[in-house]
Image 1 (cartoon, rainbow, N blue to C red):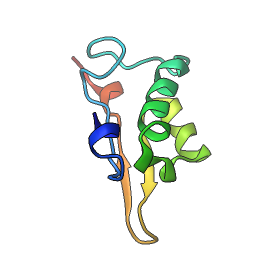
Image 2 (cartoon, rainbow, N blue to C red):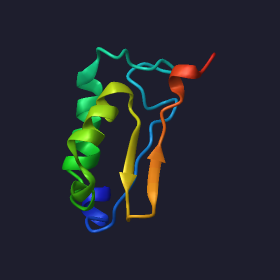
Image 3 (tube, rainbow, N blue to C red):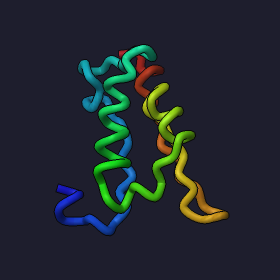
Length: 88
């Protein structure tokens, strides 16, 4: 829907507790396919986000679902995946 209705608007997604492959369980570090799928969906397929896609972002995102985007020279956005530290 974002791609259809907001193609020119950057949307910075973040993982939540119900967004993982298994409920309340973070994907294992070797489950690169899950994070690769989301990277492609969020940063390759969403037109306004392609300018933020980079090898560095992809590397950190595929490692654990977190990333940093430099919006300007003085403004960065940090999206964290805190699910690995959830005690539930």
